[in-house]
Image (tube, rainbow, N blue to C red; front, side, top):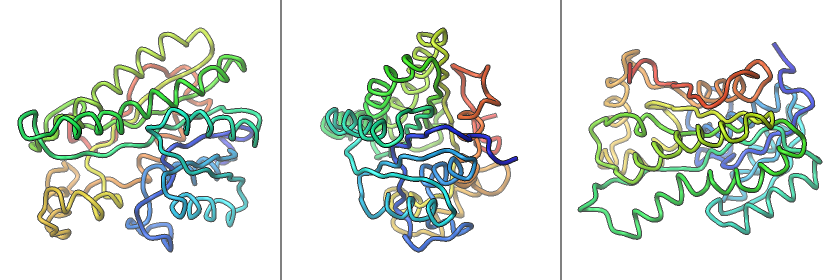
Length: 272
């Protein structure tokens, strides 16, 4: 089916990728969750406003969408900055006049438990994974209330619902908090026609594996890191950003019009 998001505007915060700017579809090294969701939103008819910290990353996402005939405007922003996100929302409204879909996709893990982790690391990782979602909701919700509709899609992690053998207390805490935050906001604004849901990815083969996790947990050995993560999955393989992206399309679309305050776990059975 095509056109599932026709006439809608999607604001994707965290729409770039640390992967190659020359990435083509099917090249896992180039497609992160936000970039993939933005591309799929556009393919389904949405106008996309793509935001990322890195200008070259968000420009790559926009180039892909425009080459395929879609509409995409961009902005760079620090998603932990109150003023940056307020400005991004204003710019999106100036460009398109509405925001029907908000996808909060900024996040990342750092290793450590409460003893090993410094206080600045704790604070910074909670800001990265939880404050970013708070700010996106804070500035988009008033406009969704005015228009009487909207879908907010937040991206959590299975680390927020279970322990997978790696000590990363700030990340797990933030991702668990994000799930409950989504439920709270969903209940508060259900009568305003606004839906809020969470995607909970499991072990995914995305550019973050190439850029960060292999160094943090695999001593820089990418092949071994991927093999270990594949082996942890009941399917024998990690998922990809396309699995997350299609879940986002469903939650953003009117097909999910009666789905709010819940989670879609995209983990190949890992937490079952």
